Length: 76
Image (cartoon, rainbow, N blue to C red; front, side, top):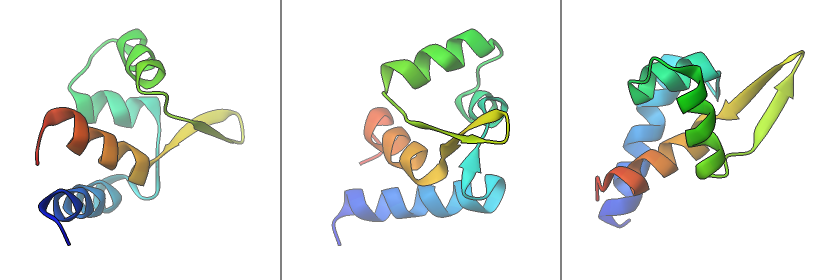
């Protein structure tokens, strides 16, 4: 396992322990440190994160978020 893979797995485990398998925009705002939901929506669009509709709300896969955060923040 490479260093990048290990850091992705660590971030995935951390996010899953906090948010479970899916995250809301509110969860993403908290994780990213944003206060403006519009900025969170823009971040989601820029990173081309697919949404899953659960009831009437969009949710985002925690594993996808973890991978993007590690890759984008240069944790490796």
